[in-house]
Structure formats: structure tokens, C-alpha cells
Image 1: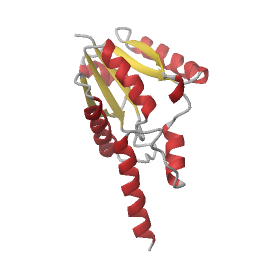
Image 2: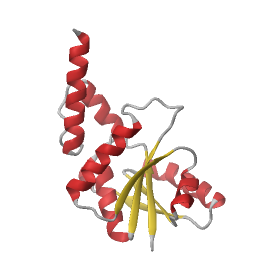
Image 3: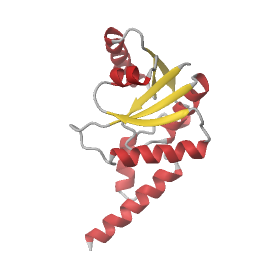
Image 4: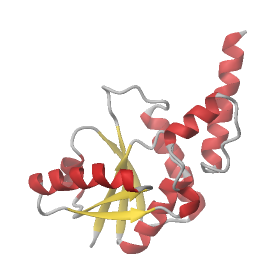
Length: 167
């Protein structure tokens, strides 16, 4: 069974992430989308919420060979634990490639049995990032073009909570 891990912060998950996930799911028997818990970095959304939002998105897409998990520590250690032989990395622009290549080579030095597969996002998604979504959402802009419906609904509820807290 060919198993791949698609790691990231997914803070929040975007349509670009889901584009990569959908294509990866057609290439592998099982894809595990792995949400990084990074305690040294302040996340926009709690890890458990990011996991749930991804699960809802996968359900809506009908991806049956995709699982969602979370981890902390090295991605390579998580991949080994899950029995994966591949990591999926999405590329939006040439600037992503340099960083991802360096990361891939480091991973290869640590775990030569695990390869990296680079997938390029569709052009209509290559400008979307979680950072842009967070900024637009915090400024009250509609982000429905960039994220799945479950994320839009979550961010809207979150905004309503904020408004109530301000009064």
C-alpha cells in the first residue's frame, strides 16, 4: 500500500491545499493530511478546529482514501509512525521551491526511505495562502473564493463571537 503524508499547519485550510490533496489522493492508496501542532508558534485556529475543518472539507469532496491527523515534532518521525514512504508538498511559486527543496534534502539525509513528491497548485490557487486568508478575514472581507465552505462558516461564527465580546 502506497501511503503519503501531506503535512502542514493548514491554519486555515485553503482551496489550494485541497487542490493538492485531491490530486495526491488519486496518486496514492492512502493520504494522511497531518496538521502540525507547533507550540512555539501562535496559531490562528486551535489544532483541533483545523483538524475538524479539514475533515468536513474531505467529506464534502468525497475523498475516501484520506485521513486527517495531527502531530508535533519532526514530520519524518510522524511519517515513519504512519508507515508512509512519501511526503506531499505543494508549490505555489518558484520562491516555494528553494525552501521545499532544502527541506526535502534534509529529510532525505535523515530518512532516505521516505521520498518527497512536489505538486504544483493550479494557477487559480497559486496566490492563496493561509496568511492572506487570515488577514482578509480579520479585516471583514469575504474569503469564500479562497477557502472551503466549512472554513467560511467557522470564520463567520468566530467574527460574531468577537463582536459580542467587544460590547
